Image (cartoon, rainbow, N blue to C red; front, side, top):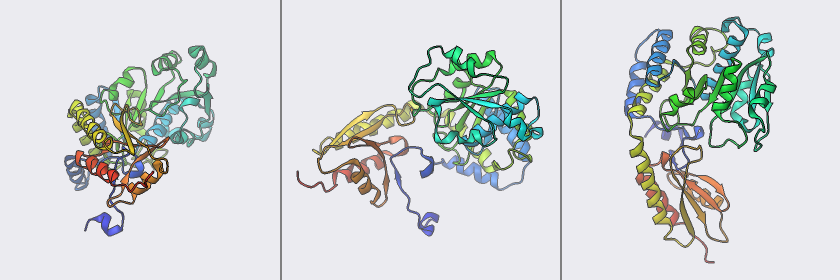
Length: 373
């Protein structure tokens, strides 16, 4: 009996993707082994954070790097450093008044449930433009909301972003002219691995990634890469120091685990991985399209905008919809978790499936007891 069985928590087949609620991703044996090694000794956590950051900066072609406890924490810390830079203070000297007297600009089309972390410091959020509305004069419009209170611009890269916001390159160009940092939320924007340096190359002052999604590191880890000046402020005053970053604790196990996972990620063959996903999609389509109640097709890119194909399955039965099929899948042993797509459809994502799991899920779908039409 494993630990999940002991606790009465069933293991699931994840056909959704690297969603946090289902554990993000699975770590490799090497990562688990390295985390175990890290857990077995005492070390100077400050030194470990500094050395790991230096190594990751070299690997990702950035000035500096900082490991945090998740992408949301990375956005919080990035804004914290930006306010310190804006107010001309070290982080530990910042007051509530410093936060109230600063602002962060956010495009309305970039709003999401996750950007609530921007408000945790008490920094006012200034919204610009509208979702699905392209700015007529983007440079002029951005400059119109920049003031002497502006500490940063928050920019979101995601497959869920509504159209309308200017490009990162244009936004960064305006920000640079006014010496304002751009904090890029790129939590799920891996693969490709090039994004680890392409976003900062395009002008982002800091780019933040989840460690527990495609990097396959610890779920409670995140990565900040970018400018040495901003990350230097975090190394000086954030966890494990006392103060504003103290509650965002990242252990030696997460630091080592993310470093190990990143090293493996950068040496992996993305082409082979995409080929495996394409093979799974083709196989699923062939299996399901032989059934009169299913229409399966390749969908690209996936839900987060990552360059990985998935299967879009449409239910072709007047008495059935995708919700009944998904309920059937979730009641199997083991349960299968998949995402509804609306309009009688759902997705099967090979990103978090093995070939054998994809075939098993398809065979279970073929056994669904459709009523006669």
